Length: 187
Image (tube, rainbow, N blue to C red; front, side, top):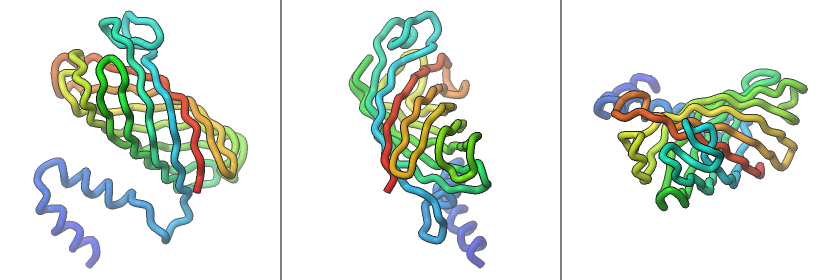
């Protein structure tokens, strides 16, 4: 009954919004689960962009931003968990603007089974940026992300690589890559 009602509601949403609505609904935190909530503050710069040095994007423009995230992490197996991470970022350069989006991450704790200590993140997501990157061809972007971090009971620190791309849905399709260092607190 529940899924039939959900299906009827989602069928009223046109096109690809159906998939987005289902994903958001299924990933919303619920008090029925024993997941963890956190917020983080991070700083990012351009790295590994074609033909540029650290801190820049293609064309030689500086690229840096400050990011705030909310994290919901749900343990699903002894050394691993799934996390959803909505974010908002203020882009200072090359042009002032805002990025908003989310990533769905798989998190693996290789050294212990209590979801503490060192971890590895891999994930994907989507974002909207108000910054007009001429080499992107669109403001709607896909995200691939990976990183390393350390988590204690009350805090975490992490370094993450983030790849923005339009997924060849517009031309040109040159990526914007960033390295992000974040500090977060669990509540």
